[in-house]
Length: 337
Image (cartoon, rainbow, N blue to C red):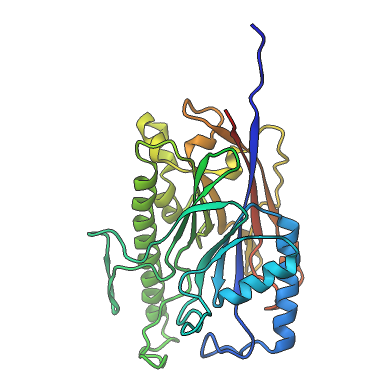
């Protein structure tokens, strides 16, 4: 009997932290100047060029203050994305963009069957943060788009942006400090607050992942700014990859680092980083996939062909018209029959 190789459909996905993408002349943080018209044009140009280079079927974006600014970047890219959504950052009246913190969005050229934004943690997953009280909601709600490929296959895409490691100092409603930021012990507590918040968000995100994967065969891609590296406690709270080693049933609800799942022909380079902090490169922006993209799994529907890091601009000096994060793109494949 003649072996007939399977046909595959390709899916390019990418994650991009856009570093405070906002319309001109609007103050997004009290301690930051608004973009001038000229700065805005430079940022739209630069981001549009990067989108064009990525040419992804699905873009997960973070740090968007104004949905209209994202649409301007996409228009500048020359690419066509019929679906663009950043819940909480809309600019159609009476909405005036995101307030307090930037939002997560998705743009895609694929058909979207469903869109869902997760604001609250599942019951019982809130934590008490010293000095702040209960933390029961995502600061930047994860966004789920269920997209449909041309051959009919559905894929869940979850865009995320977890709490940063930046110390969470106490302040009043006007943003005035309520504690001595020069006191090193106060700084320790402020960093612990951030860790507790990110950990709680990771645990809540894990619950969403389990609900999406348990007893289903719809592939899932989770991508975004995890604000920690792939093997950190908080990232593994979301992925639970290590559980697979001693519990085969865990594969059903585990996530796998796309970079580590690349095919043997992929060029794995030592430039796989997405952020540089105080001179040290790290991977904060990540793409994780469910076992349907793991070639060796019994439940495989495809594979990860390649993961690329677009990070050359990180060495061009700090400039807010660019991003301080590299962009990460994965080429995924799914069998069409």
